[in-house]
Image (cartoon, rainbow, N blue to C red; front, top):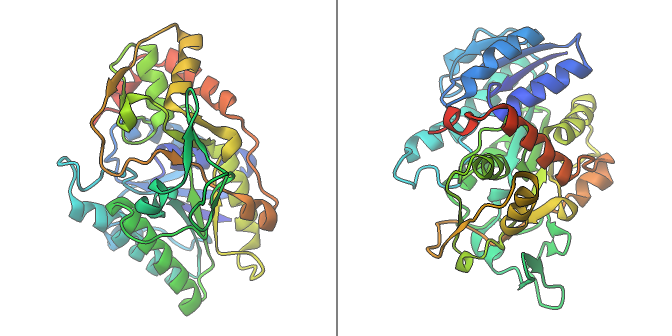
Length: 356
């Protein structure tokens, strides 16, 4: 098996490369990364030690893909993954679209020409922001909870947001590029018989993630708490009640192995949610409590000013992946947090390393 992983020096790409090489040492792994994310360069030597063939390149340039020979599968883990990308005054909207959508076009053409399969790692942020905001919630002492007694939008339940939930705009520029990439990938599947699997991922988290306030929130929060960096509960009256679920790359990899083996099984759905789900979800306030117990008490400030595109509750329903693939996450959220905590203790300058 020959696999090309894009964004191979990022947290998800490097984690998948490590897991695949550990499980399947005879497979040939190739990787490409433009090293634009601060800290990503630290993974180059580690990947080389695993036997991954690395190319410094950019998927926005189709010619950068020409050096790769015959490939069986492309796993697309390259993206600008911030919901604020292109609108925060720090990043370019054109670069966002060129990378997240233009890059997808180049990769699909690459797969078409080589008769390779394509796995797109998409995101929960393809779901409609107005619809997400309209999910009925009740506030407990420390977290927002789904209100089962109220009327909910189609595709949503106490288990989370399912694949049938609205994807109507606005979803953010980031979410829009990923949703368009999903559509293109599925069209290439139907038009050119390119084997395609689309995985809408929840928040991925684990040791070695490059955390920032707008992405990689679990890694960011633990590192900032441990080393007494400023932390804020932004919006939602400064309560910290907003909730996210978490998924470890090891659990994502388990689904990918099934998809790589299936190749073009027409009985399987082309698109599924893959996330930690309700059992592996937590509010920022609850996360702070966990950090207080692990690292000692630390005060978090309240910032009442809302931030664009923030939503109060984002839990993905992965029941379709469980039904169709027999997949479910095995890593618990406390085990993921402990892994991140140990990494933070061993790497006191991690936030500075990955700071934009």
